[in-house]
Image (cartoon, rainbow, N blue to C red):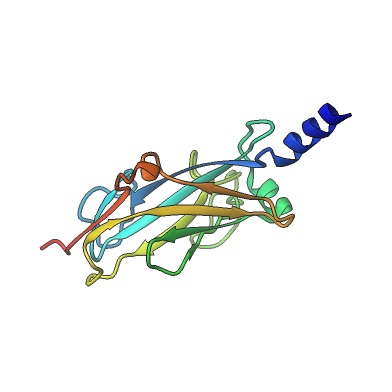
Length: 165
C-alpha cells in the first residue's frame, strides 16, 4: 500500500512541461545580424526571447492549438524589470488582400512556431549583467520554468552594453 501511494505521489509531482528557450537580436536598432542567438545587447536594441514548450510525458512539442487548449501563458522575468508577456502567434492562413500570406500557406515559416517575448532595451538602460528566466503556467495551474544554462552557477546570460555609436 505504501509503495502504491509513493508511486502515485511521484507521478503527481512529475513535471508537466519541458521548456527550451533562447534570446536573439531583433531588427530594431540592431548592432549586428538580426535573428541570431545572442546574449550581449546594446541599449537601443531589441532582444527577442523565444521559447518552445514540450509535453514532459511524451516529449512532443506543443502546437499552437495545444497551447491554446491548455491555456498556456508565459512571461520573461529579467532581474529588476516587470515581467515581459510572451505571445504565441497563430499559424498563418492563406487569404486575400495586401499583406496576406499566399493561399497555400498553412502555418508560420518553418521553425517560426514558438512563443516570442520582445524587449526594446531603452538606450539609457544601465549596462551590466542580468539574470533571466521564463515562467510558464497553464489553465490547470501547472507550471514550468526555464533557466539558462549556467545561471545557477552565477554565469551571465544577458549582458547589456552602453549604446553603440
